[in-house]
Structure formats: C-alpha cells, structure tokens
Image (cartoon, rainbow, N blue to C red; front, side, top):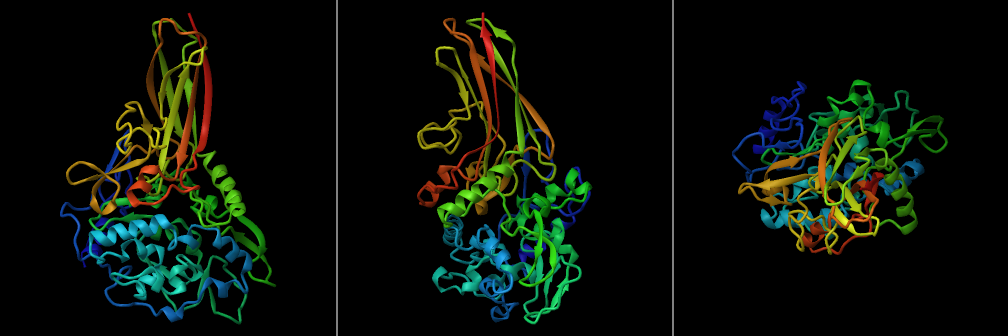
Length: 464
C-alpha cells in the first residue's frame, strides 16, 4: 500500500511558509522558480493502490448509484449546466483518454485507475475500472465522470487530495442547503462542508505515485487572502443565483454547476461552446495585469530598456494553477519601429504554433527571454518531460495570489531606426500547447489552443 503510506507521510510535512501541515515538502513559494519534489526519494512503485481511492477490491456497488439523467427529472437546470462542465466530460475528453493510454502502456495497465480515481471515483471504487479496461465496456454511470452522485453521495472528507473523500452509495443525498425539503425520491441530509474549499481539494489537489505534488490549488488557497476572508473556490467557480433547487421547490440560493474554469469541452455544440468561451474569457481577463515602464526617448543605435511587470490579480490561488505543466501562461512583447520593422519579440509562436521553448520542434530554445509562468516537469535524468509518471520534479514560475514580478528586457535600436518605437505587451493564456497533441497523436483542437489575452498594454518611445 505504498501510495497510502506516502500520502500519510505528506500530511505530516509542512508547506514552506505555511504551517497547515497538509502539504509535502518542496511545495513552498519562491521569488522566482518553485521546485516541487516527491515526498521521498525512493521513486515510483508498481504497488500504487490506495485503500480509499484505488482499492484492490471493490468498496462500492455500482448499482447503488444512478445516472445524472435520472436526477434531471427533478433538477433539470442543474443537470443542464452540468452537461456543459468539464466534470461531465471527465471520462470522455480525448486528451484525458490519450494520457490514460500512455500511462497504460508505461505500466502494462496496472496503474489505469490512477488518473481515474478522481475522474470517476464511482467507477474506480466499484471496479468497473480494472487494469486493462476498455472504454467501450464501461458502464454509462462511470462514463458520466464527475456526475451528480459523485459529489452528492460523499459522506466525509478524509484528505484534501487524490480523491480523498468517502463515498456512500446507500446514504442520503448531501448538499449545502441546511434545511432541505423532504423528497419522495431520496433521503436528504445537509452537509455544510460541501460549500468549503477543502471539498474541492479532495480531487483538485493531486500527488503522483511517488508523492510529487502535481496540482495544488487548494494548498495555494490555504495561505491566500481569499482564505483569510472566508471565500472558497465556489465563490468564483460556482457563482450564485436565486431559484428553486428542484422542480416545484422553494426559492433557494443556487450555484452554477458549469464550474467555469479555463477549459471548454470540444464535444459541445458550437453555440454552447461560444457561450462558455465567453465565460472562460471573462474569468481569465481579470486574472492578471501587465504593465510597461519605458524611457520617453531612446537614441538611434542605442538600447531601449523595457521594464515589464506582471501581477496576479487572483487572491485565491496562483497564476496559473492546477495542471500548470500543461497550461501555458506567458508574456508577449513586441517592439516595432515607425517603418513597421520588428526590432524585438518574445513570447511569439513558431510555425507550429508553439512557444519557442524546449518543446518547439522548429526553434527549440529560440526565445531566450521568454517570460513564462507555467510549470515544467523534469525526469530523473534532469530532462524535461510531459508525462507525470516520469517526473521527479515540477518547476514553476507561477505567481502567488496578488504577487507581482518584474523583469527588464533589452531592445537593440538600429542606427537607421525610424521613430517612434511602439512597444506592446500581452499577458496570454491557453489551456495547452500544440506540442502536447503531437505527443499524443491527436489533431489540434479548436478550443484547447484558443489564446486569451488576460491583459494588454501599449507604449510609444521617441527615437532621437
């Protein structure tokens, strides 16, 4: 039971700069590059099973759970929203399936349940998911991913990571409404903790088999200003409204079950995707700011110093957060003279649409000034890797909540430069880079490569 041991050890190891006692070593904040390492140095093990989330024997009966379609009979609005969510596509997303296939090949199927412990806790614990499973053979309830009962049948939180909740298929439906109306279809029980951030952390904080912290939005939230003010994840990702929780019921404070974040499921129809994309962009556009400090004038044949400052305007977690090793968040800076000649650029793409970093096939490491905030995984040989099961470190320059960072870029100004020089800066984000799809043998998606400009600024400098 190696993972269970590692996870118990991690509970006793403090986060640097935070004494909550819930995160393993090497996860602490840094001024520039954070380096997260495993909770021990013994590496992965083939015996990865955890008795709670990846049990060797079934701990649930799949037949105790119902489909979201049945829930829709009384809760049509909630289910309609859920169908647009990443939760509803957690088991059908092609990127996820391709990554599971890579892991399957690496471990001969023995770790097939690792990623699925969160993506379908019901399927994993009922053993609808077993080593070497076939997607087409899975039950529809398993394929619904994080469906209604995957959350509302949770009876307790055991730990805030790696599907760290206890599911009860025969118990009542639980929710944050403290005075639920009686129902003829199921018993109901209030669960105030369901409105808290720790509830989200049970799946959204993830540790690899070797204890390496991969995703930690809840750990980031714990020491944040938002936590100090009592604002959990749901404040932004499940905004509230008033209406009936069930058909014919009284008005309640309801919460959006689209769980808007940074992803838009590709399989949704074009109109739904467009509406959801607007919501994602609106969320991202307030996430950070970029500013420039420049001289009023620069001599021809001289050098223009471009001072760039980026601030995380999110007070709850890092920018970016979650699977930062897949996300891309960076600054594009372009300086152009009055004749339209590009004097300098960083943060631009190669011919494949990749940033010109390690993963660029056309211009690897061609952008030495790249200001990127996303993470990168490193294997035992010190080489970059895109596969979490090969990684022993996660290196990231993510900005902590409300923190800013400043750099100076140097732009050579030719002797024949035509003034004025226009300098633009954009703080940009996209869910994935094209290189990941090449690795997985997938076609480039429409939504996953959409670039959102979180913030942009432009300045002009005279040439003397």
